[in-house]
Image (cartoon, rainbow, N blue to C red):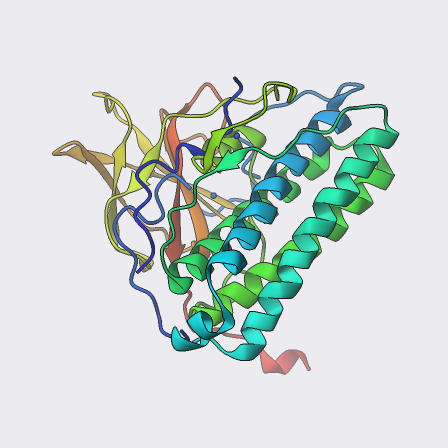
Length: 329
Protein backbone atom coordinates (compact mmCIF):
# COMPACT_ATOMS: atom_id res chain seq x y z
CA UNK A 1 0.00 0.00 0.00
CA UNK A 2 1.15 3.51 -0.74
CA UNK A 3 1.56 5.73 2.30
CA UNK A 4 -1.21 8.02 3.40
CA UNK A 5 0.04 11.55 2.96
CA UNK A 6 -1.38 13.55 5.80
CA UNK A 7 -0.52 16.71 3.93
CA UNK A 8 1.19 16.54 0.60
CA UNK A 9 0.18 20.11 0.57
CA UNK A 10 3.24 20.31 2.73
CA UNK A 11 5.31 18.31 0.11
CA UNK A 12 6.01 20.30 -3.04
CA UNK A 13 4.90 23.58 -1.49
CA UNK A 14 8.31 24.57 -0.25
CA UNK A 15 8.12 27.11 2.51
CA UNK A 16 8.94 30.60 1.38
CA UNK A 17 10.14 31.20 4.99
CA UNK A 18 8.81 24.09 -1.35
CA UNK A 19 6.03 -5.92 -7.18
CA UNK A 20 4.97 -6.27 -10.38
CA UNK A 21 2.02 -6.35 -8.05
CA UNK A 22 -0.61 -3.70 -8.85
CA UNK A 23 -0.89 -1.44 -5.83
CA UNK A 24 -4.28 -0.32 -4.54
CA UNK A 25 -3.76 3.14 -3.08
CA UNK A 26 -5.04 4.40 0.22
CA UNK A 27 -7.50 7.27 -0.14
CA UNK A 28 -4.95 9.90 0.85
CA UNK A 29 -2.02 8.38 -0.97
CA UNK A 30 -2.12 10.72 -3.91
CA UNK A 31 -3.16 13.66 -1.77
CA UNK A 32 -2.44 17.07 -3.12
CA UNK A 33 0.65 15.75 -4.73
CA UNK A 34 0.43 16.95 -10.46
CA UNK A 35 -14.38 18.91 -23.04
CA UNK A 36 -11.03 18.17 -24.90
CA UNK A 37 -8.56 21.01 -25.11
CA UNK A 38 -4.91 21.54 -25.84
CA UNK A 39 -4.66 24.46 -23.43
CA UNK A 40 -1.53 24.04 -21.32
CA UNK A 41 -1.88 23.90 -17.55
CA UNK A 42 0.15 26.81 -16.26
CA UNK A 43 -1.51 27.76 -12.96
CA UNK A 44 1.03 30.49 -12.28
CA UNK A 45 1.53 33.25 -14.82
CA UNK A 46 5.18 34.20 -14.39
CA UNK A 47 6.40 37.12 -16.45
CA UNK A 48 9.65 36.83 -18.36
CA UNK A 49 12.32 39.09 -16.91
CA UNK A 50 16.10 39.24 -16.78
CA UNK A 51 16.38 36.98 -13.75
CA UNK A 52 13.63 34.49 -14.59
CA UNK A 53 16.21 31.91 -15.68
CA UNK A 54 17.84 32.14 -12.24
CA UNK A 55 14.48 31.62 -10.53
CA UNK A 56 13.79 28.60 -12.72
CA UNK A 57 17.23 27.08 -12.13
CA UNK A 58 16.88 27.61 -8.38
CA UNK A 59 13.45 26.00 -8.43
CA UNK A 60 14.80 23.09 -10.48
CA UNK A 61 17.64 22.70 -7.99
CA UNK A 62 15.12 22.73 -5.12
CA UNK A 63 13.28 19.83 -6.74
CA UNK A 64 16.49 17.96 -7.56
CA UNK A 65 17.66 18.31 -3.96
CA UNK A 66 14.37 16.73 -2.88
CA UNK A 67 14.68 13.84 -5.34
CA UNK A 68 18.34 13.34 -4.47
CA UNK A 69 17.52 13.06 -0.76
CA UNK A 70 14.52 10.83 -1.43
CA UNK A 71 16.43 8.21 -3.40
CA UNK A 72 19.49 8.28 -1.16
CA UNK A 73 17.40 7.84 1.98
CA UNK A 74 15.59 4.89 0.43
CA UNK A 75 18.77 3.12 -0.65
CA UNK A 76 20.18 3.75 2.82
CA UNK A 77 17.10 2.33 4.51
CA UNK A 78 16.44 -0.69 2.28
CA UNK A 79 18.85 -3.33 1.03
CA UNK A 80 18.75 -5.23 -2.23
CA UNK A 81 17.24 -8.15 -0.31
CA UNK A 82 14.49 -5.87 0.98
CA UNK A 83 13.58 -5.01 -2.60
CA UNK A 84 13.74 -8.56 -3.93
CA UNK A 85 11.70 -9.81 -0.96
CA UNK A 86 9.11 -7.20 -1.96
CA UNK A 87 8.92 -8.78 -5.45
CA UNK A 88 11.19 -6.29 -7.22
CA UNK A 89 13.96 -7.67 -9.42
CA UNK A 90 17.70 -7.33 -8.92
CA UNK A 91 17.82 -5.49 -12.25
CA UNK A 92 15.35 -2.92 -10.94
CA UNK A 93 17.44 -2.43 -7.79
CA UNK A 94 20.41 -1.73 -10.06
CA UNK A 95 18.28 0.79 -11.96
CA UNK A 96 17.50 2.54 -8.67
CA UNK A 97 21.21 2.97 -8.06
CA UNK A 98 21.61 4.54 -11.50
CA UNK A 99 18.65 6.83 -10.79
CA UNK A 100 20.25 7.91 -7.50
CA UNK A 101 23.48 8.65 -9.33
CA UNK A 102 21.56 10.71 -11.90
CA UNK A 103 19.84 12.80 -9.22
CA UNK A 104 23.14 13.56 -7.53
CA UNK A 105 24.59 14.57 -10.90
CA UNK A 106 21.63 16.86 -11.62
CA UNK A 107 22.18 18.62 -8.29
CA UNK A 108 25.89 19.09 -8.96
CA UNK A 109 25.27 20.33 -12.50
CA UNK A 110 22.67 22.92 -11.46
CA UNK A 111 24.82 24.11 -8.57
CA UNK A 112 27.71 24.65 -10.98
CA UNK A 113 25.50 26.48 -13.49
CA UNK A 114 24.13 28.84 -10.83
CA UNK A 115 27.57 29.51 -9.39
CA UNK A 116 28.87 30.30 -12.88
CA UNK A 117 26.02 32.80 -13.23
CA UNK A 118 27.16 34.55 -10.05
CA UNK A 119 24.31 33.21 -7.93
CA UNK A 120 24.49 31.29 -4.67
CA UNK A 121 22.68 27.96 -5.20
CA UNK A 122 19.94 27.00 -2.76
CA UNK A 123 20.96 24.26 -0.35
CA UNK A 124 19.14 21.05 0.42
CA UNK A 125 16.34 21.19 2.98
CA UNK A 126 15.28 18.76 5.67
CA UNK A 127 12.68 16.31 4.36
CA UNK A 128 10.14 13.82 5.59
CA UNK A 129 8.97 11.13 3.19
CA UNK A 130 5.97 9.01 4.24
CA UNK A 131 7.29 5.63 3.18
CA UNK A 132 7.87 2.57 5.35
CA UNK A 133 8.32 -0.19 2.75
CA UNK A 134 10.10 -0.63 -0.59
CA UNK A 135 6.69 -0.80 -2.33
CA UNK A 136 5.67 2.57 -0.89
CA UNK A 137 9.00 4.04 -1.90
CA UNK A 138 8.77 2.93 -5.54
CA UNK A 139 5.16 4.07 -5.86
CA UNK A 140 6.05 7.49 -4.46
CA UNK A 141 9.16 7.63 -6.66
CA UNK A 142 6.97 7.36 -9.75
CA UNK A 143 4.75 10.18 -8.47
CA UNK A 144 7.63 12.50 -7.56
CA UNK A 145 9.34 11.93 -10.91
CA UNK A 146 6.05 12.67 -12.65
CA UNK A 147 5.71 15.97 -10.80
CA UNK A 148 9.30 16.83 -11.73
CA UNK A 149 8.57 16.14 -15.39
CA UNK A 150 5.54 18.43 -15.20
CA UNK A 151 7.65 21.12 -13.55
CA UNK A 152 10.37 21.12 -16.22
CA UNK A 153 7.83 21.03 -19.03
CA UNK A 154 5.74 23.82 -17.53
CA UNK A 155 8.77 26.07 -17.06
CA UNK A 156 10.15 25.54 -20.57
CA UNK A 157 8.28 28.44 -22.26
CA UNK A 158 9.62 30.85 -19.63
CA UNK A 159 13.32 30.08 -20.10
CA UNK A 160 15.07 32.86 -22.02
CA UNK A 161 18.44 31.14 -22.49
CA UNK A 162 18.54 28.52 -25.23
CA UNK A 163 21.46 26.88 -23.45
CA UNK A 164 19.49 26.55 -20.22
CA UNK A 165 16.48 25.30 -22.18
CA UNK A 166 18.60 22.52 -23.66
CA UNK A 167 19.83 21.59 -20.19
CA UNK A 168 16.27 21.51 -18.84
CA UNK A 169 15.14 19.37 -21.77
CA UNK A 170 18.00 16.97 -21.20
CA UNK A 171 17.15 16.57 -17.50
CA UNK A 172 13.44 16.21 -18.32
CA UNK A 173 14.16 13.32 -20.68
CA UNK A 174 16.17 11.54 -17.99
CA UNK A 175 13.44 12.10 -15.39
CA UNK A 176 10.97 10.52 -17.80
CA UNK A 177 13.18 7.42 -17.98
CA UNK A 178 13.25 7.31 -14.18
CA UNK A 179 9.48 7.49 -13.94
CA UNK A 180 9.05 4.83 -16.61
CA UNK A 181 11.21 2.41 -14.63
CA UNK A 182 9.27 2.98 -11.40
CA UNK A 183 5.84 2.86 -13.03
CA UNK A 184 6.69 -0.39 -14.76
CA UNK A 185 7.98 -1.88 -11.51
CA UNK A 186 4.66 -1.29 -9.71
CA UNK A 187 2.51 -2.54 -12.57
CA UNK A 188 1.54 0.81 -14.09
CA UNK A 189 1.81 1.50 -17.82
CA UNK A 190 4.88 3.76 -18.24
CA UNK A 191 3.57 5.40 -21.43
CA UNK A 192 -0.05 5.74 -20.26
CA UNK A 193 -0.48 9.09 -22.02
CA UNK A 194 0.84 10.13 -25.46
CA UNK A 195 1.84 13.48 -23.93
CA UNK A 196 3.55 14.55 -20.72
CA UNK A 197 1.66 17.04 -18.56
CA UNK A 198 3.03 20.58 -18.17
CA UNK A 199 2.26 22.26 -14.87
CA UNK A 200 2.98 25.71 -13.49
CA UNK A 201 5.41 26.50 -10.71
CA UNK A 202 2.77 27.34 -8.09
CA UNK A 203 1.07 23.99 -8.63
CA UNK A 204 4.36 22.10 -8.42
CA UNK A 205 5.32 24.16 -5.38
CA UNK A 206 2.00 23.24 -3.77
CA UNK A 207 2.89 19.58 -4.08
CA UNK A 208 6.58 19.59 -3.28
CA UNK A 209 6.36 21.48 -0.01
CA UNK A 210 4.60 18.58 1.62
CA UNK A 211 7.87 16.69 1.89
CA UNK A 212 9.85 19.66 3.17
CA UNK A 213 10.24 20.12 6.91
CA UNK A 214 12.53 23.15 6.88
CA UNK A 215 15.05 24.88 4.65
CA UNK A 216 18.24 26.83 5.44
CA UNK A 217 17.49 30.48 6.21
CA UNK A 218 20.19 31.43 3.71
CA UNK A 219 18.20 29.99 0.78
CA UNK A 220 16.77 32.63 -1.50
CA UNK A 221 12.99 32.99 -1.35
CA UNK A 222 11.41 31.69 -4.55
CA UNK A 223 8.62 33.78 -6.14
CA UNK A 224 5.99 31.05 -5.88
CA UNK A 225 3.08 30.34 -3.57
CA UNK A 226 1.13 27.25 -2.59
CA UNK A 227 -2.57 26.72 -3.19
CA UNK A 228 -4.79 25.21 -0.48
CA UNK A 229 -4.62 21.43 -0.66
CA UNK A 230 -6.99 19.17 -2.53
CA UNK A 231 -6.84 15.46 -1.74
CA UNK A 232 -8.34 12.43 -3.43
CA UNK A 233 -10.73 10.80 -0.96
CA UNK A 234 -10.68 7.26 -2.36
CA UNK A 235 -8.36 4.50 -3.51
CA UNK A 236 -6.19 4.47 -6.60
CA UNK A 237 -6.08 3.94 -9.50
CA UNK A 238 -9.36 5.30 -10.83
CA UNK A 239 -11.07 4.76 -14.17
CA UNK A 240 -12.40 7.10 -16.80
CA UNK A 241 -16.07 8.07 -16.61
CA UNK A 242 -16.50 7.18 -12.94
CA UNK A 243 -17.19 9.62 -10.11
CA UNK A 244 -14.30 10.60 -7.86
CA UNK A 245 -14.41 12.64 -4.67
CA UNK A 246 -11.93 15.04 -3.13
CA UNK A 247 -11.50 16.68 0.25
CA UNK A 248 -10.28 20.25 0.47
CA UNK A 249 -8.17 22.00 3.09
CA UNK A 250 -10.73 24.73 3.67
CA UNK A 251 -14.32 25.80 3.23
CA UNK A 252 -15.86 24.58 -0.01
CA UNK A 253 -17.63 27.24 -2.10
CA UNK A 254 -21.41 27.53 -1.95
CA UNK A 255 -21.58 28.67 -5.57
CA UNK A 256 -21.03 26.43 -8.59
CA UNK A 257 -17.44 25.24 -8.81
CA UNK A 258 -15.58 22.91 -11.14
CA UNK A 259 -13.05 20.12 -10.93
CA UNK A 260 -10.59 21.04 -13.65
CA UNK A 261 -8.68 17.92 -14.62
CA UNK A 262 -5.29 18.15 -16.30
CA UNK A 263 -3.75 15.20 -18.15
CA UNK A 264 -1.22 15.42 -20.96
CA UNK A 265 -2.23 18.46 -23.02
CA UNK A 266 -5.89 18.21 -22.01
CA UNK A 267 -7.47 20.62 -19.55
CA UNK A 268 -11.01 19.47 -18.82
CA UNK A 269 -13.35 21.30 -16.41
CA UNK A 270 -16.28 19.31 -15.04
CA UNK A 271 -19.10 20.75 -12.94
CA UNK A 272 -18.57 19.70 -9.32
CA UNK A 273 -21.11 18.57 -6.76
CA UNK A 274 -20.61 19.14 -3.04
CA UNK A 275 -21.88 16.75 -0.38
CA UNK A 276 -20.72 15.86 3.14
CA UNK A 277 -17.69 18.15 2.86
CA UNK A 278 -16.52 16.36 -0.28
CA UNK A 279 -16.47 17.66 -3.83
CA UNK A 280 -17.10 15.19 -6.66
CA UNK A 281 -17.03 14.95 -10.45
CA UNK A 282 -16.77 12.29 -13.14
CA UNK A 283 -13.30 11.49 -14.49
CA UNK A 284 -13.22 12.68 -18.13
CA UNK A 285 -12.48 10.22 -20.90
CA UNK A 286 -9.40 12.23 -21.90
CA UNK A 287 -7.52 11.42 -18.70
CA UNK A 288 -4.87 8.70 -18.66
CA UNK A 289 -1.94 7.98 -16.37
CA UNK A 290 -0.69 10.40 -13.73
CA UNK A 291 -3.09 13.33 -13.85
CA UNK A 292 -4.00 16.34 -11.73
CA UNK A 293 -7.17 17.96 -10.46
CA UNK A 294 -7.89 21.52 -9.31
CA UNK A 295 -11.05 22.93 -7.78
CA UNK A 296 -11.72 26.10 -9.77
CA UNK A 297 -14.29 28.86 -9.68
CA UNK A 298 -15.00 28.68 -13.41
CA UNK A 299 -14.80 26.34 -16.39
CA UNK A 300 -12.64 28.55 -18.60
CA UNK A 301 -9.86 25.93 -19.04
CA UNK A 302 -7.47 28.76 -18.21
CA UNK A 303 -5.87 27.91 -14.88
CA UNK A 304 -4.74 31.03 -13.02
CA UNK A 305 -4.16 32.15 -9.46
CA UNK A 306 -7.48 33.98 -9.69
CA UNK A 307 -9.65 30.93 -10.36
CA UNK A 308 -7.80 28.10 -8.59
CA UNK A 309 -9.45 27.49 -5.22
CA UNK A 310 -7.70 24.25 -4.20
CA UNK A 311 -5.20 21.84 -5.69
CA UNK A 312 -3.64 20.12 -7.31
CA UNK A 313 -4.60 16.61 -6.28
CA UNK A 314 -2.81 13.74 -7.98
CA UNK A 315 -4.76 10.83 -9.41
CA UNK A 316 -3.67 7.80 -11.38
CA UNK A 317 -6.12 7.01 -14.18
CA UNK A 318 -6.04 3.55 -15.74
CA UNK A 319 -5.44 3.88 -19.50
CA UNK A 320 -7.70 2.20 -22.03
CA UNK A 321 -6.33 -0.49 -24.33
CA UNK A 322 -4.23 1.12 -27.08
CA UNK A 323 -5.61 1.51 -30.58
CA UNK A 324 -3.83 2.35 -33.83
CA UNK A 325 -4.49 2.36 -37.55
CA UNK A 326 -2.37 -0.19 -39.42
CA UNK A 327 -3.66 1.13 -42.76
CA UNK A 328 -1.15 3.97 -42.39
CA UNK A 329 1.73 1.59 -43.10
